[in-house]
Image (cartoon, rainbow, N blue to C red; front, side, top):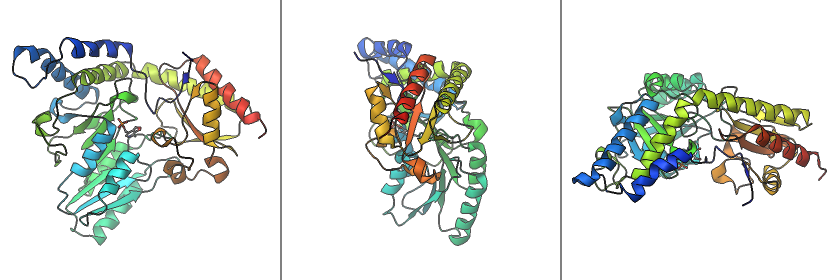
Amino acid sequence: MKKYIYADNAATTKMDNEVFEKMKVFYTDDFSNPSQPYSFSKNSKAAIREARSIIANCINADFDEIFFTSGGTESDNWAIKGIGDNMKHKGIFISAIEHHAIINSCRDLINNPMISVEYIPVNSEGIVLAETLETILKNYDRVRHLMHQTKLVSVMYANNEIGSVQPIKELAAVAHKYGAFFHTDAVQAVGHILVDVKDCNVDLLSASAHKFNGPKGIGFLYVKKGTDIQSLISGGSQENGMRAGTENVAAIIGMACALKANCDEIDKNQEHLLKLENILLSKLKNGGVDFIRNGHKNHIPGNVSISIKNKEGEMLLHRLDLLGICVSTGSACDSKSVQVSHVIKAINVPSDYSKGTIRISLGKNNTLDDVDYIADGIIKICSEKI
Ligand code: PLP
């Protein structure tokens, strides 16, 4: 098989071998439905309980605040559509750089006259400032005094395209000051940086296993006790009656195993990734590539978004693909689009650079040789006259 240099870890990650090994037995031997009362289901039931507890510990949540979902998209839809009562007035505030799982969840609601959606701008480093959010909430309350009974602020923990990490604790405090719930899409953060739901005092948090070396199609929504959220998926009484459907047992076990492995090694992985990205950036600079690094100094380690002068991201992606290098342009979920992404637009990257944006997202399995190869590839492509 052709060897690839995989540098698109913000799109998905390679599942750890131990995770796969741990999952296998729940397909082959302990395949029971955990809801059944007979003794054969004891193992799968106990394994789910243990997985829930491991996951809760990793983000400093309580055991019964973790609800399994099919991934980040479902968790985001649930948070946006499930909070409060859609038959009553609701004001939703999202950042301008949210993932489409949030943007399109809001779009689904725009025909509901009881619901309004407002966008919170970011600065040029992709950060939502607490004072910006405060101004928006204050004005909103003044204009719509008491009209909206539920307010929800949703700001992602870390951006998928440029990696900027938001001041979540400060933003949650502002949201609470104005009586709003606070949700964070932490799909890019969980398993990569320390996330402590009690410390940052969020009400809802989305995560997805395939972004932290776990299986695809599984994630969770953290729901702080007492949060007014409705179930979106009707059926059986799984997940405490909040999310129906037979549990994806093996994937849940895999998610817990992957998250624990990443959290146990978080410092080591961060150090490794910051070293790799520094080497990559200085090689590009020394190689004469004219680029801007996007994002903020507080970012997800390994997430390197660069905009190269007078180039096209789409062209760069395909040329790097011919060299066996996997990177992304814009957001991975939108990789067919040649448009400058909403994130790059929101941070105002100058037009002669913005079209040449690529995201190199390094993961814990990347090596120094990978980074050398990627840098050499980009330097070679950029030095060619078109
Ligand atoms: N939110 C963010 C920030 C993401 O990066 C992604 C995936 O790209 C999602 C949500 C969707 O997650 P999933 O692929 O698990 O549905």
